[in-house]
Length: 366
Image 1 (cartoon, rainbow, N blue to C red):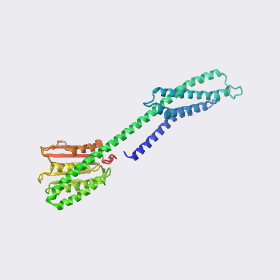
Image 2 (cartoon, rainbow, N blue to C red):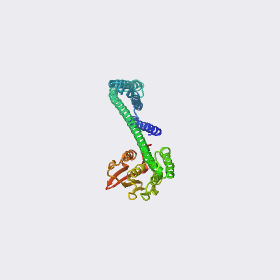
Image 3 (cartoon, rainbow, N blue to C red):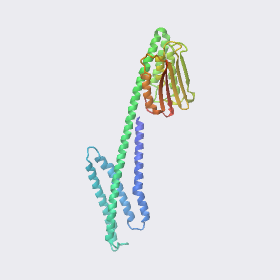
Image 4 (cartoon, rainbow, N blue to C red):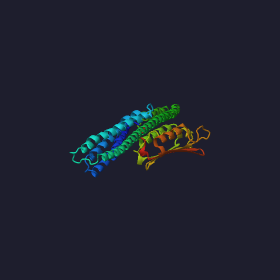
């Protein structure tokens, strides 16, 4: 994942946290007070106290969320520190609630000159004490909510970090696989050019020039995705190099990509199969044909190779290292939307790669 994706991920996480807090505060602290204000609008001082208690809970929530939990729920700090701080906050919050009630609601109403003096102050005090117990439970639930949200945020941060590490590991593995692919390709191509030097120096010189163009494409001009047209052009150049030292009519190549020529695809996907076909199917006999087919239509790209297979070679029925790397690369790039199958029937080896939904390729640079 690149730097821009990291920044975008942080922004999304920040927006999600803000919206979560806004919804929680509105539903738990503000919405009930609006309802209660409307229901008890005729009671002197009641609206005022309800909003005061709501703000106390909001302050407790954010003190717990940003200060207490971050400093106490760590491996180096004991749990009782967390409990102790929260007990202190609970006592302070209840004390503030009591003082607000006593000085701004109770005292003004026990005065004989008050607009609506209390007839039974003792019952009013008892009623407040019962509401204080309710407020205590509500503050404890507020603390629990802060813990739940903070731990959820930490879990989400760890999950994002895990995904980032997975993406970095996948990108590194893709780079390693591509490096192996480049080395494999260069080794096979140089062997072909070496065989041409004594037979036809002019053709060998032309082949070196074409190889330099192909290497430029592989090393400098290949982004995370290319078009199907670019990839098939590269494959055609490779086939042309191989044709220089093979009998005429040995290669049958069918490429049909017109309907998806500009569709994006990961680079260097076709070349391992084509390389493998030439490496193991080039017997020098015209009757041992090498068949290559690349078809792209209806959102599906298919590459199929068919070549003669010598049963006494050291290559297994699943193909060589190029085929193994190819399977791993397809899995990393496309997951279940790509497949690579190989079959051996009599003296023929067939490899078939299919990529579905190639328009939704991962944006991971190989």
